[in-house]
Length: 277
Image (tube, rainbow, N blue to C red; front, top):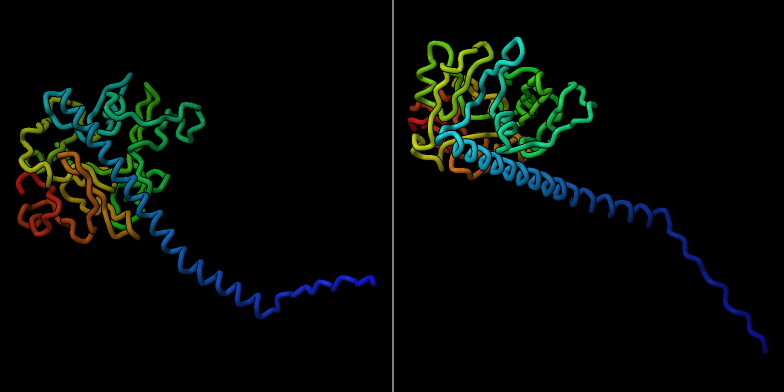
């Protein structure tokens, strides 16, 4: 006797079941997404610390080649018919102490062999140039933009997303800046390099405590503590390289807010910013 096979019964999801599945997926996403974003942010912080340690090696090699002198935060050089001020990151690149990759295709919007990433780039930084060096707070976007200097003769432009602990040897307080900060530099208007005096590694008494390079823009130049930026962990922490070459993450709100006086600066002793701390 021939028997027919029973027909397969297809069970369709009801609307309520679909809504339950969708709500479960949405709940899982809401739980996992912040954790994923936090992990990515932590990864960028670690990468930034690695970049700063790489900078520390470059600074140490520079000093080794210059009788233990610390690198200038900026110097003025003569090219063709005029003077140009270049910063410490350019000096590291040109001396091959810490080279950065260059866009040599000519496609750069700035018409230069411009640096593209590398160890001078903070992964929490913005990719546009700083329009001024006067941020209004440590969370100001200006602190996440890069500082660039251009050399026309070589068509070279090196960008850095980091601020160096320096003062300019200019103005009536030039001697005070020399006595106070590890790095010194020339202003754009200074053309006589003989005015530039530099400290040596041997003069740094507490290198493991003294700030060298930090998240931020330009140099604080004694007065502008807002140039030290809060970039990490939802704009609450700052990565800082020390003179001994180690880098660490600090809560931004424990950093010094006054670099002009050792008494005021000592109220926030982690890390040190002045030589007399």
